[in-house]
Length: 447
Image 1: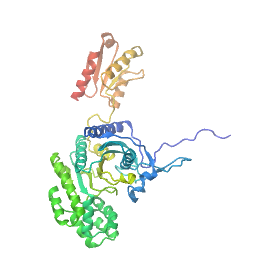
Image 2: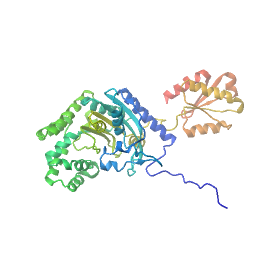
Image 3: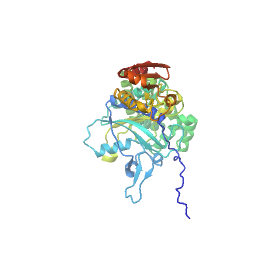
Image 4: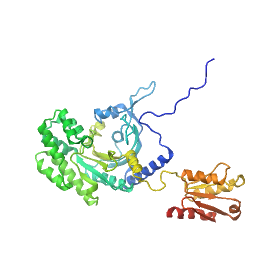
């Protein structure tokens, strides 16, 4: 007789994917809420796009190395070739082209998952969230400076104190390449090689450049310029002298000088925003200023990155439209904040602020009313469901990290009062029921 019992399925995840359990989700929601508040304070408005795009929408926008990582998707009988979005910038470009009546400048933010078939490692997953803020329409470097100011504001609010926003310009890189003697056909290889500087060091970059058939003399001239030292103004002045014969480089330097001036006016200390001629963003669609943020500890790579991409929208419309923006790397930010203990006390334990106990079956209605009253006062109140001892209910609250417990026994109910217990502070008071929210708020502010 055939066994009709269903085969047991082993509970496991695909490589590079992960479940985010409640305590970690609370930390994640704290970071997202902080980022969202900053985005909206700067006038950026939310946008949502689908996880699936037409394959033709994504291909040809990122460069061959990146496009190998795009997940293709479909279903039985499906006629359209689909793919999971690789980032949020290309979908934004598609939206701008598809809805030409959107008021410009369009300042949008989007917080959503993307998918890349990368090799999983610390701070890098195959499904992860991006938090993007972009400004479409203005060619002014004021837009780029605002993106950098927004980045500084987000990281400062999250508690980062040791970070550097690195700033460069693709036009400057093109000029450095031409000054060194690198022809236009080798430029893509040039970017890829320089982009590995932090990982492989100067010797590694030299080796990479030689693999791309770039002559030794060109390599030395280029590396000298990539290592120019000094403050922002000194670096830009030195490059302006050396590259005086390169229109591309001079245009890039003018853009960087303008941005640096705006950052100075905004009062952003130079230690947080540094011109870095060796910094390269890997994606090929950047056309002007590029920027990324690194932290000193732990060594986890960049935690934000972006730049100007004035030609991408033109791939859909045939007419270029200025655009600039950044991605806040929430996954790496959360990893860093966890490792360095940066989350505020209580973030990551529970969303519940007070557990309303169930003293006995006869008093369930009183406990229900007390929980409802606390919620109406703006507190997150959870009701204990089972008929168990008070000690067991308090242990449950302690294990969950719920800071306060509300107790309604026969004496409290008869007197119209409620007993509140502060588990961390070891305090307990009995107050009138309508005074309970104020008492809990007092304890919360003292914690």
